[in-house]
Image (cartoon, rainbow, N blue to C red; front, side):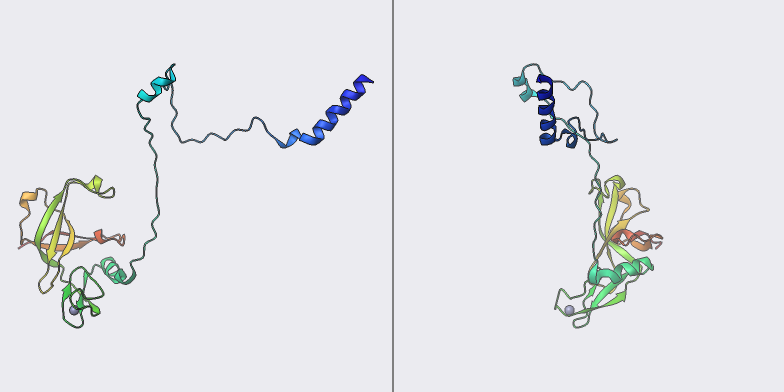
Length: 195
Ligand SMILES: [Zn+2]
């Protein structure tokens, strides 16, 4: 009789809890990344944790930016076709080397025109530090290019000159274009032009 009772009890318990639905040893799978640390120092007295050095981990990330050039798009189509495009105000005639579709002076709409591919160094700077994208290219020279008959300047990279002291204000420069267009302002850069 006693044995029978025990069996009945067990059967009833199984029905209520249903242990088959749970895995009490479940574990997240290990992945190939992460930091494996051996012998992480750990004090025997927890009060000493406050003296602990910070743990620094390395973590790689990438982001895809979706970005529209909107009404500036023709400028980048120009670069891909080895053309430098500026804009000219339809009302006051102000000419922009860095294109804008509406005039800063009078607010009227501008039309596109093709800039000359030779200009002069208006001013320059040599960058020894840069944002993440350009950091590995430092040091590099940036110039503001002035063009005949154009009222504003164009910011671009100058290559082909090693030392900043060899860059002269007013020196002639000519545009070069990347063969493989990245549709970025850096698709155009300048090199010294023979006088
Ligand atoms: Zn205008």
